[in-house]
Image (cartoon, rainbow, N blue to C red; front, side, top):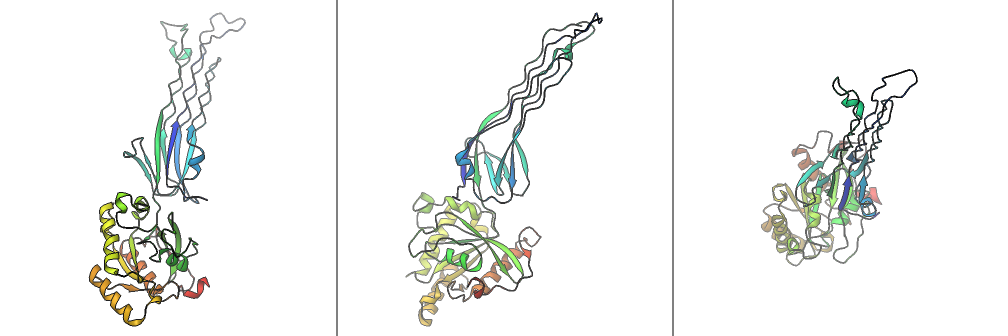
Length: 351
């Protein structure tokens, strides 16, 4: 299934059914009077966040959603049936914007959350509604009200507990594949990851969700490379894991490049707790590793974790650090971390 995180959709609620003009005509009843029924209400357009979806790809193939028109009223005071409503099923974390793509309508952050995007038109009154002591035979009825129509934008921001950021080939996808059951594409060339990936990691009987996004390069906020369009998927995370590859000639510069792009993007990313890790350390000898770890510490102001997703070295410590930050951020409430009875993760789990 392809990943799509933005879609433009046209919606229209149903028109209300027209009221009926009818008079009672029965044998031996001299003054039957009006008996035209009201029209039915038009169908609404709803949006609902559902489980089991993580892309908006369905809206690439269907962009028009319309509620049904209400049934017209009929004689014998029969009210028309309401038109059928239509529901857009979207992944949890979807935001709905007006046509300008800036005015937020609703942010669906919980499974089962529903919102009415367009209300159906009211049905028109039949002529029986207008009967009075001074007008006992009205010969008119109301037409149904027109439904609402608008164009909206759907924008998906994945909901995860931790987010992976870094330059291309920093080892983010390998990290995700090693500690979760996710299977992102891994190769030794830049921009192997073209769309975000999610995985569920387990450590000390606790689960949390990790999001991996395509790598950032200098000038990403201006559209260089894949740009910063995927950074929205780590806006909702509680902690960021910043991976810096040990293969970089200047690890301090690599760290500052990504940090600058996060600052240029905004979205509260710079306010999140960040854990810095020197990845792919299996390619260095002890002397070179010590040198690059010191350089990265000077650049980021904290002692970086030393990890190798290939050999499993430092992975348990990294997952525990992420878990501790998530708990400190207040996610240990049943919504983020969940308990499991499995053993602690080890590098043999994915062997």
